[in-house]
Image: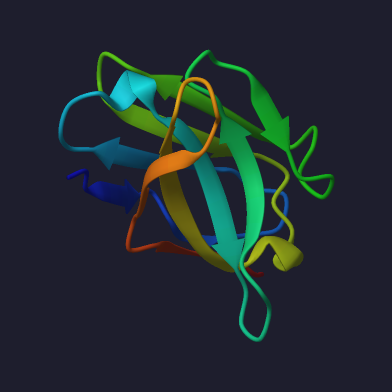
Amino acid sequence: QVQLVESGGGLVQPGGSLRLSCAASGSMFSDYAMAWYRQAPGKQREMVASITKFGSTNYADSVTGRFTISRDNTKNTVYLQMNSLQPEDTAVYYCNGQRRAAFTGNVLYEYWGQGTQVTVSS
């Protein structure tokens, strides 16, 4: 069982920055692919950024060049550095962890954090 706890959300002005953190309990964190999702009011949850257990990253087009995902396996933590924030980035941000089978890629385990609110407003 893995628990994911997000932190770092808050209120920021347009153009500002925030860094979200997601701390994972339990072992085998380095075997998990991690991702950040967000959900704005009235919209579907969308993937913002992901990082494989090997460190490869992927970003939604809307955040490419502004957001950076990283992980520190020694601290069991994944980060999302968000720069040049805009009002449309306002959402609840969720941390996601997946452990996949080595050969098939099937998801064996998946966990979600409780979410952290990010509000971008002047």
